[in-house]
Length: 173
Image (cartoon, rainbow, N blue to C red; front, side):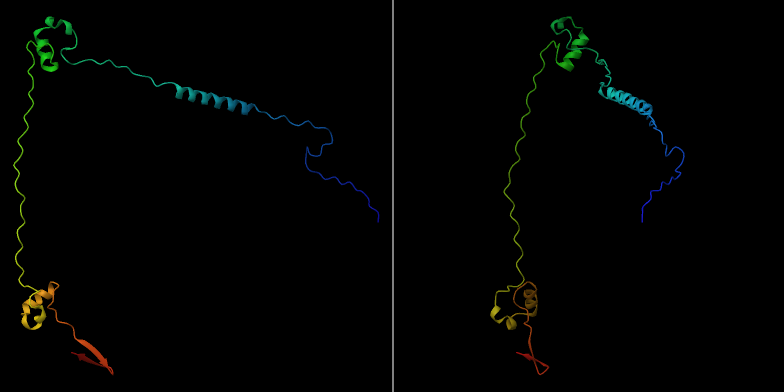
């Protein structure tokens, strides 16, 4: 065997497989430039609006008071009687007589102190559970046994001891 070179052409469509030098198509960036310019313009407008200070409104305060008691202090003698009366009453200025001095209020007297109250003595207990403890089972009444047992003292019957021998319970005394 020898090898032989065979050239096979396959149709791949129009415009493919040109044998002449083909210049590539130029890309058109017009749309990119226009959209970029518009977006920069919008961004610039937003930045300018954010940087500019907010408009300030100025209002002039008008007084609704009938007289300005700070005006013309050096010429209080020229004030009208009504202005003197108003300013004397409201600003303590322009008074013909000296304003009365306010005396401090006297301190109220201290309330009397009473001795502390002593709590009442509790009533005596109905039974003394420490008296006659050695022979409580015989000498105490049933009521004393019940009361002392209920209040944590002696007087409770001791439980019987039970022993089980050969399965039968037996009480040990």
